[in-house]
Amino acid sequence: MYRIRFHGRGGQGIKTAGRILGTAFFEEGFEVQDAPIYGAERRGAPMFAYVRAARAPIQERGVITHPDLVVVADETLVPVPAANLMLGVTADTVLLLNSGETPDTWRQRLNTGATVIALPVADAITDRAALPHIGTRCTGAAARLLGVISRAALERALRTELRALDDASLKANLDEAFRAFDAMAAHEGVVHEGAAISARAYEAPDWTDLPFEPARVAAPDIFAPATSVQVRTGLWRTMRPVIDYAHCHRCVWVCSTLCPDSAIHVRADGAPEIDYEHCKGCLVCAAVCPPHAIQAVPEHEAAKIEAGGAG
Amino acid sequence: MSDAIRRMKDLPSTHLLGTGTPMCAGCGGLEALHQIYDVLGTNTVFVNAAGCMTLLSVYPFTPFRGSWLYTAMACAPAGAQGVRDALDILLTSKRLPPEDDLQTIVLTGDGAAYGMGLSSTSAAIDRNLDFLYICYDNEGYGNTGQQSSPATPHAAQTATNTGSRGFPGYKKDLFGIWAAHRPAYVATVIGAEPLDLAKKIEKAKSLRGPRLILALAPCPTGWDFDPAESVEIGRLAVRSGVWPLKEYIDGKVIHNHVPHPRAPVEEYLKTQGRFAHLFSPERNDALLGEIQAHIDAYWAAVNK
Image (cartoon, rainbow over all chains, first blue to last red; front, top):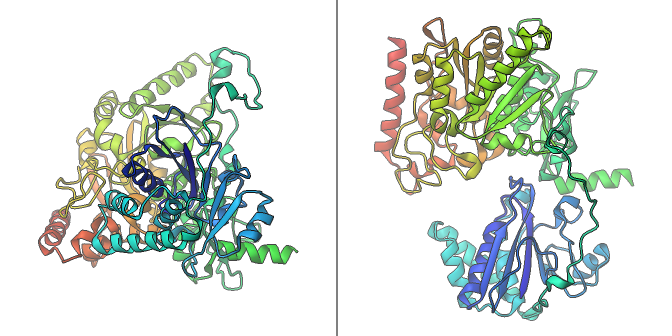
């Protein structure tokens, strides 16, 4: 059985990528299972989709914990713990990263024995949530790495799953998918089918047993206020709003009221301050700021500057 | 909130609603809700019908500092009746001091408010239930991928109306339906106009009985626009007359803002992917004209 996981951000077409690959497998006569993981499937939020394909009926269910191929559409997800993209990655796994850096760099950085393959980033892109056609590029590359999906089956799958698109968008997606398919020729068939996982080999995770308790105790009641602040939605951000305090007019009632997420608070000195732990990067503040004192900076660049400043 | 809100500067500068919610970046509904919550305060119990905002409180996380309860889609006002009755029993039996009383708030999207939950809402108003109904109206079933709802505007494309004419129906007049019940208060608001919103919430808070706050909620995901445009699109909805800011009180409807000059509706429609089929591959003058005529007729009746 082939077990494939696609990691990306909401808006990059990852759900569709898994779907297209599943349909391509189906076109080649495989039994297929594909699904996105639903959760906070919001623009920019880390999300993943998975595909299983086998020549026999598939009895396995749920999230793939023993992947044969992991496709990472967005390299900026690597340091995000919530993305959990290294889950179950071993020396037998192939890791396909959409990245401008070399496989060796990634092997060292991730300290992994997995086979790492880089799918070069198409162009210089500022907003990671808007990577053009990244989903279809990943599908095209993944199909070639698997070695069991023909160009014709891939095309039929793309045309089926993208039938709602207009002709120009469909053509652009086909071109991108085939370009990636061709670029991976040297690695054709590098992904091997994983062994069947027996129920007998199942090992219980290291969990904590809870005693059965009465409903008053066990019901999902929350007694503390505003616990949502523990959720770091700042990880969704692909563009960072930065306040230029030299030009800020201190009209805090504008940005702090219009920020949908209550993520701009007013400091003791009357200046606004953005809470980057929670700012989702919608950039409403930059759009409404009367003196235009808020600039949008690509998050990966802002993070680099921050890291450089700290080191 | 002792001083009345008169100017933008009077708007609350500390925000009560917690960050870290799973609402989409640029959510117009969350923008309105956090502003509303700042005025209402924490002595509230939110009864939340299924919808996008059900995701606000997913165990063990909640952005609220007061209480919250989840109901099925059609019955939030019935849930609110139970909560209000329980509070009243506690108050009359002196088990709850009056200063600890909570305002009963219903929070739903347009799917529940305009459609599935309308029957239980009507019945709650009939019983003169003391509650405040907040509807975040993003004109479709947003949480499940923007299928059409009775709040979807004419000609908008949705997941269930993908053709070149979009949604064939017309947006239901929920404000009018509520007003016909002769409740204590009905008002339309939008997060992009925070001063108008805050004044209306202060007024609603001071009244008793059934009250509706109907908030248009620009939805980057369902309406297909860049999240940064959320506020500008909200302002355009008001400027073009698509979203009249008005209130019903003491048997009368008052328009708080008559846009003058009124922007052509095209300016508003152009900003959103759900109306892109009206402009390309070719302009649909017939449909654009129909939408504009509808708005013109509304304002002609207001100005009469």
